[in-house]
Image (cartoon, rainbow, N blue to C red; front, side):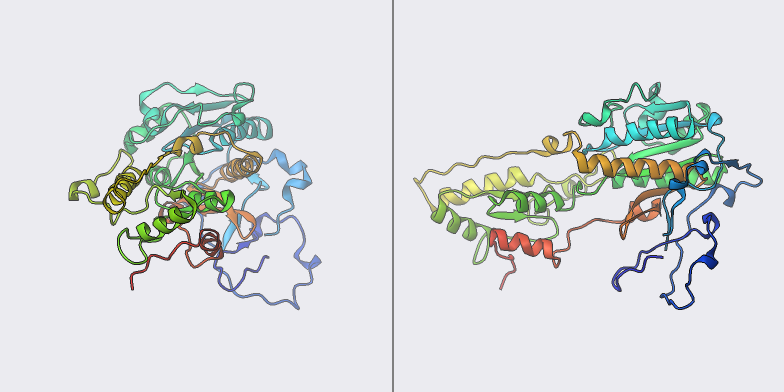
Length: 409
């Protein structure tokens, strides 16, 4: 068992039914641990009776059953609930792009094919709408061999097109019994609806979400924060988690004016969702939603560029002032995964496969306290990975930029 720090509430714990060692071999009598509650993960046997199990072919490899570490720890189990030769898996990428999508697809295909002997793997084109609007692509290890070196997703992606009945009907019509859904928080909300409807219909179909939202995120400032820390050329970093204002003492204009006077230039990094409370817009604009149901953000970059020019023309007439505005969104999102990302995505993909083959459904694999575990997809869909502005990382940003906290006196 791994014991977390007091402020952490998520531990990984042994799945007692899957241990292949004798507990008497471990002298645990002298040890005491705080009580933990094992997070319940839905299993196919919860609503389908008399499911047949099969011996996991990985049981012959002792290194796959070293698990010791509340969520269920990820990894292969002794017994599986799908005969590999009868598996028809579907893989789909939805929503926005981020590095690693190609790696996850590749590792899902290679893992299913090589580890479990699955030979029917369908790639769903263009996101959720692809289930009912396009013919799938038959995937194999040779086809996906170099996909981890590409940016974006070869399967293509889209927002919208989500119709839970059409999607599940298509899953049934194509005979799929495993569905791997790759995307961010909006995609996971769709996965929750699919999982719940499949459970309601009592279908022998396992649904797994692979969430790639580690640093991406429209309404969080992780990318802006890390870019600021790594470049050391940034004068001010604005993120959604922190409010800011333009005019007056301690405002953005005063701060940038000082920097321009000192250095003759200033670099401003702005996260996509920053400033939504100060950008003027109609009520309709502020409640506008895209095809995936996400809030359509007002353009903070374009607005700031306009406001900066107006400020300078007003307070510094006849002085030269230029604003160079760069929007690198898809230069970031569409790059190939680096070595660290590839390793992370491989672990996610293989963890997903082992969990689904063991009969678990409605989950997302991910790291908790250094261990890969299975997290109920409802939790992932509801969670927001926001920047903790009281954390040391944001303190580092403040020390690097020396920017004000933008709190009005």
